Length: 313
Image 1 (spheres, one colour):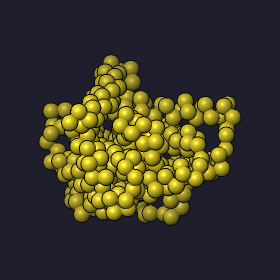
Image 2 (cartoon, helix red, strand yellow):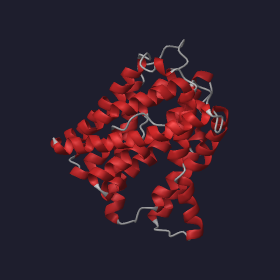
Image 3 (cartoon, helix red, strand yellow):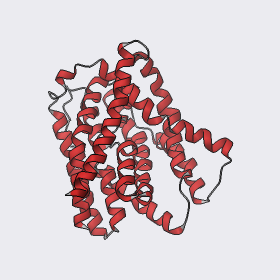
Image 4 (cartoon, rainbow, N blue to C red):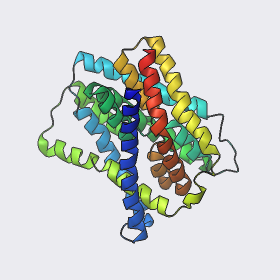
């Protein structure tokens, strides 16, 4: 019970930090310091510059060895599988052609906030090894989000999927740059590496500030009235992590690797839900409400999933 309460405290702390930055963005919009139209213009900076730096930096921060490469490969494979399970589970739902928010609901069900929620929680519960394994989740998240996620958000516009988009997008291009650097233990000079690290550090604060400006333009009294978000919570926070737990048990994965995979799989809906909604002209207000409530509920569900994973191994 003590461990469960510690995990719950850690999850609550991360959500509270997130909400403080969101509140700053909220106030900045109300005071006309950093408004929602400016935030939309800043969205491309996140999309094309900052997120790629996050991915490349995750590779640069990992020391190559046969054990780390093997562990990362397993964690990466499990994370890809978790996203495919999310796609599989979410696909039958939210198909009402008269509801333009369907892509938002599916995106929020499939993609989790691995970078901001899973990594700090893994560090608190599992240490550096857990953070390393969870970094595989960041790579998988961005790779699939910048392929399937883009297609999903454009689907309602009847945009035909083009194979070249599998390679020519910020997420995959970043992996293609970062992976060889990791595999061949390339040590970039500080004059190159440090700017990448500095830019990647902008990811969470800028995303949360932008998120706050969208929240300021929404009617928060209606946050509990979106019926679909309760199904999103069931898929994102409960169903997918439990399915991944069965997979980890079947593969007889080590305890730390199992817990890291479950933490990644159980992360609440990604902030990218809002970012992609803004990028592809979806309802950012709806996306913001879903992410906000999902993150709050994860304060309870994340520690429960971690406890189940630790008992089950």
